[in-house]
Image (cartoon, one colour):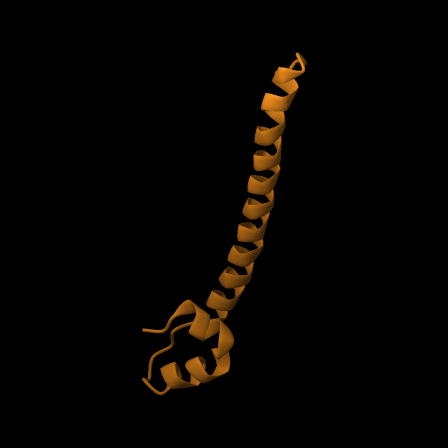
Length: 70
């Protein structure tokens, strides 16, 4: 079994090694899905950062007596 990092870093070598086993493992879809996963993870991290920033601002706004409903 290959590690995802190993597949990413040495994709062609892993593909050749798996082809020697005589089966078709369809690794082309892995590359596509991995790229999509990385993009989604980046989006999630950006959203979390925005949420953390907003969470820190809410107590400050409450302290100032401002409306925090929005």
